[in-house]
Image (cartoon, rainbow, N blue to C red; front, side, top):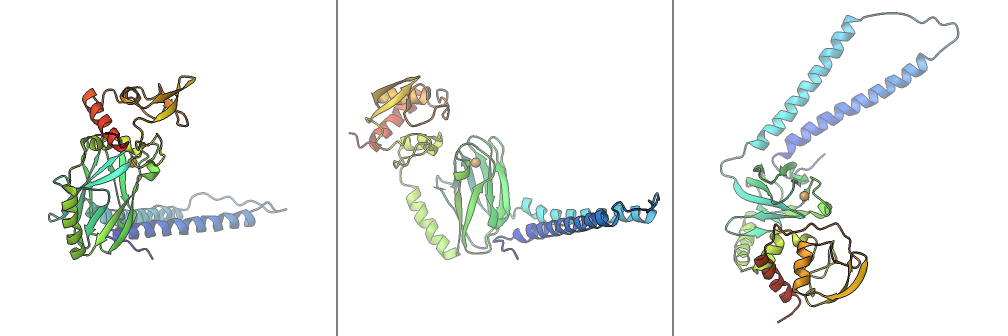
Amino acid sequence: MFTGASNLAEGVDRTFIFIFSIAAIFIVGITVFMIYTVVHFSRKKGKEASQFRGNAKLEALWITVPIIIVMVMFYYGWSGFAPMRDVPANAMEITAIGRMWEWEFDYGNGMKSKELVIPVNKAVRVNLKSEDVNHSLFIPAFRVKEDAIPGYSNYLWFIPTIVGEYEILCTEYCGLLHSSMLSKAKVLEQDKYDVWFSEFKNTASEPVPDGYLLLRNTGCIACHSLDGTRLVGPSFKNLFGKETTVLAGTTQKSITVNEEYIKNSIYNPDSEIVTGYNKGLMRSYKDVINDNDIQIIIDYLKTLAGEK
Ligand SMILES: [Cu+2]
């Protein structure tokens, strides 16, 4: 009935189907019984109400039957859950980093991927980290979901059993673009994975500009695109040196985006908002980005504007 793509899926599905079936039986049973009593015991002329109290058999029944049902639920739940916390010693380790609003998968040695690429039939342990607020890594096809909480180390693991591409979501409301905090889990045959990994190793070691790393690690590019796409705030592409109108308090004025404007926008975001964008969506980064880092960011923005 369900197709889970990991070793843990069966235990989860079994529990779900059992609890769902019990709930379905009860909702149908109770509804039918209710309709029957409403019709059968409705007020009729000349009928005496019968009085009775206590029924030991019935009471014993409604104590023991629910206990049995709940214990079976517990058994299914426990036998599905216990293996989730019991990681095989030979599992490969990948660290998933959650930040507003993207997932990143760290394979070690500075190799970071936006997608979780893994070989089929190999145990994978995913360590969960958050750089800002609470996130939660959810891979529905594998039936795994765990929170990524700042300052706390958490993990999940699984063995992917079917080659394919699966959705990864964030299931902890983490702010404005929470719903677009998506990624993919790509399960490859071992030989294809090996090819991917060696290519990945080569590209991952290419140097990345410091300015880009700063923007990414501080979460700036979640709201300011690098390719001209309109997100929460203005794109960084061709921003430096641009003429634009801003709203300073209630007065509109024309400005040129220069070093001073960028610094002010990082420290006092609401003081001069580019028209067409909203106030109150960005906090001050005064205590996060120092003057030196601002200069690195400005130099990087200049390269995005094609400046000398
Ligand atoms: Cu999130």
